[in-house]
Amino acid sequence: MGCSGCGSSTPNGCKNNGHCASGGCSKLEVYDWLADISIDNFSTYNIFEISFKNGSRKGFYKLEKPLEVFVGDYVVVEATQGYDIGRINLKGELVKLQMRKKKINEKTYEFKQVLRIAKDSELELMDKVRDLEKETMLKARVLARNLGLDMKLGAVEYQADGKKATFYYFADGRVDFRELIKVLANEFKIKIEMRQVGARQEAAIVGGIGSCGRELCCSTWMTSFKSVNTTAARYQNLSINQTKLSGQCGRLKCCLNFELDTYLDALRDMPQKAEFIESEASVAKLIKTDILKGLMTYIEKETNKAYTLSFENAKSVLEMNKAGKKPVNLTDLAEVQEDQTDNGEFVELVGQISLSSLERNDKKRKQKARQDNNKQRTKPNTNVSNKQDGQTIVKKEEDKKTPTDNSEQKPQKSNNRPNHHRRNKKPGDNKQ
Image 1 (spheres, rainbow, N blue to C red):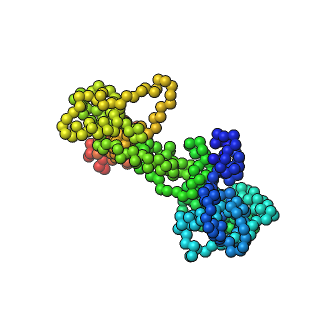
Image 2: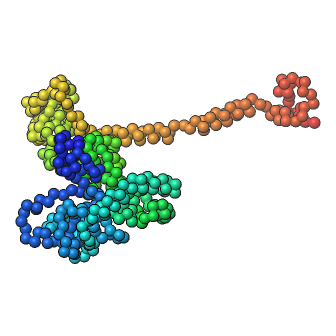
Image 3: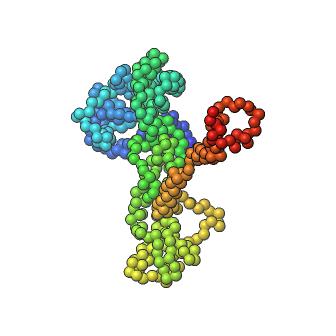
């Protein structure tokens, strides 16, 4: 690392001595491990790997002219419109290896040309237009917001001659940015290119500090992204917490794959179907597995004593149980375990959840959610019950009334008659 946080007074690596001009150390940097080896026709290969904008992107270019260039030189290369300036990253046989890795066929690939070595005036112009990138990005975000486009601009990259700018944006779906291109072209008087990137590429462009306290891997040294799923976390006995397992891009962290092969190799020695083991004293249940140390912790149901067994001892007990035999106790087979919680040392508790317990907790959560849904379905609706109550009340009031109550709708001869006389009227009294 060449940043100030590497812990050394004069850091090495990118040779910036504590300052990262690219926003990330060792971004797309390479080491010429063939530099001290004498190879015939080493420097006559006319295809070079050139990086742009301090390593943010790179490409392969061909040199047709009789020009002597070296690694680290800034050269002017051909672009779609105008020219661009990049730094020579690799030359010679290493370029062939890189092209083979990228599956680029030298015969069919259309290489752009290396024109000349960059002049001081051209380098000054490149630095001048690169200083405009931040201001341009802020203005472009305001214009995109005014047009109501569902997109987020992540970065802007100017071409070295200042005639073209590439806008990197992130969006969930397709975006019609034709009107935005017209507005940007009128605003900045340059050619506009829009390039959509994914969530991981956006994090690589923007950069940041990860939960480990270091710069994001995608913005420093990673150039390719492999798929990551929760299976990698389960193999490593990590708790399935989406918040902790997700990176700044919102996807699962790429570092979940870094140690996966080590855990897979260690799991080969782990006994299968070892949730319970039996001894003459009691039945013990598996509560924790340390994959890298090769230890399994069991607890007896009756005595609640914990025993830590190695994979080999656990396998031997399981084989005895399959043969119908049981060990006298687990004390002789248990590993000696020191209590580190009393001496003030740090105890790592991450990854101490077994896969079986995760699956059981999963089943319990699903079963509880299913029961809650059933309760909500069977629960009577308050509005319906109130309506029914209201109907019953009306019905009770109607039951109190007699058929003579229909006479109340007709005009009465006298309002001074008491109400009890009207209630006691006979059905024949309403006839005229």
